[in-house]
Length: 364
Length: 233
Image (cartoon, rainbow over all chains, first blue to last red; front, side, top):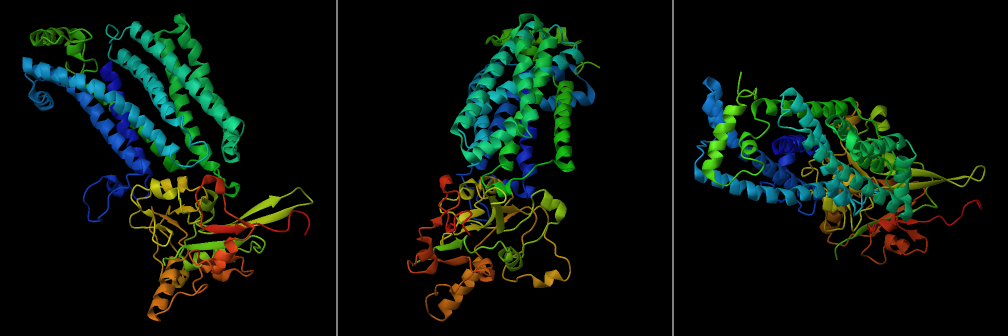
């Protein structure tokens, strides 16, 4: 399950990180955000939230990738030991010479413990800093103190939803019914329920504060969202993120695999709408009414958006094809692998034998 | 003493003729984008005249307000630029270094006055319009931001001329294209560090206001509010 989730993080981040670069006027110069002694004789501007963003995203990507790849090493080693031909050569490289000695198991465990603790503050910081890209600019509706926690909650919310969908698909496609049980979906559903409540609380708090503040510049953007041309999108978002998933997730009978997948699907749509409503209406309604505009996407923008959606799916499918999507050694060692190396080693061998036939990536 | 360039716009005098807009385009080699792109809000008028209607029909009156970069002392566009393309120069101007700009467009989002413009395309001029390009102003390439410079090229030329003649720059000697071309002389440009300059004296007027003062940007463009209130013309 961790691996299902971490793969989503890494691929979503890898694709998401391309967007600021796609968005640049001179994309080929994106590396000017990196502080290095350049011929231009100038550092990046550390006051700019975009520079913070650059560091936050690269740190998070490095951390997530490490967190994803470290525990795959024993699994790849297992595949290496059982494969032949070209496949063996590839997995030999990927396994990084893993032999399964006690010292290796010990180091892996220490590393995983460190990573599990470090990745949390990094995750919080990256979503906060992304929100600060908005909040640090004096744009009506963006310049808000609630944006940091709001974005962190939104990221966890949509992340769990994506995870539930991915798990259900992987479960069906790779016949992992034995390993991804309804209980998993039930528990994730409860977490999703909590996040849905937290999300509706945040959006209520944000909207009410703006409404009572009654700043003319903010109210223009506010009303365009609440009852102007964005109202349909706004209320669709409320339905998708709260009104539909809340009863499904709150009623125990409905919190089945199918139920959580339906709730997650509406949430993923709703959270995309949320981002759209954060970006577009405030920029259309900045301070001077003369400059108010109307945004409509070009075919280039639509193509890029669809392309990255498809890219995400492609990366995930390829990952599930070439990597054991459920960690074999962790599964057989129990949820928390025993620190005793021999035991873990034996577990791996046992698990490998049992699972060899169930994993299409290692057989066929 | 260093200069601190500022401007005063007398809204009582502005007729909304947009001569300033045309002069600015000609002086600063600003490309036009065509009707389709203009409909997407991609025009690049460094100065534009905002027209608002005051009152209800038939008691209605147009209000013309030329808006250009306010050259803020606390400019929101400056701290957000990751590459220092947008920075504060020694004479208080919000300078834009085109060669440093990578086109994040963050400055355009941060600017409350919406006076920073993005080059969606490489600039092009229909023949023979390329012959009227100003050799003192660089042409901007696709992907960079551009904005009003207070006609920095004219300021520099004036300073060089004064230095060559071994004298101080006179008040009113340097005029940006918009100021020079304004038929009713609604705009005045000068050094705010000189308490006796015309721009300093006018900016101390009781009618003096700044645009969006509540945002706290400390603009160096001052607007003189209209004296004749609505309906008693």
